[in-house]
Amino acid sequence: MNPIDFIALALRLSNSRNEADLRTSVSRAYYGAFHVARQFLGDCGLHFPPKEMYAAEIHKKVRYCLDASGNGDTILAGDNLRTLRNQRNEADYNLGSVEFRSPASVVAAVRLAPEIIDAIARCHTEPAFSEARAKIRIYARDVLRIAVDEG
Image (cartoon, rainbow, N blue to C red):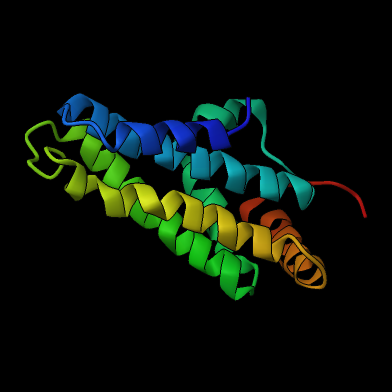
């Protein structure tokens, strides 16, 4: 599945007047952006163990790796991913929150997902990618103890 499809769904749902749709739009926006970021780290040669794919820690590790890149675009993507995850947590876990009762209230959160993807795409071109990749690989291997491809 292409994670961009989650973001397209999030954008469609964000126009609804139904609170469940609006909350779901924030959740799908986050997961679409998260999976794009994780794929970017895979392109950097990182391998997250299958057991970690479902653990809460992977969300932090993805952001930490983006932050460690030294690239302004991926650092921005990591910051926006953190903000969007906080919004996703609020939407999914705080059912008493009034923040998700109108489309206007979720627009800013949902719009973060395309911004994250665009920032990652800008870093995915040379020479930015080679520089960020090297820093991410060192940080992932030495600090987070994540398996990294040889070379």
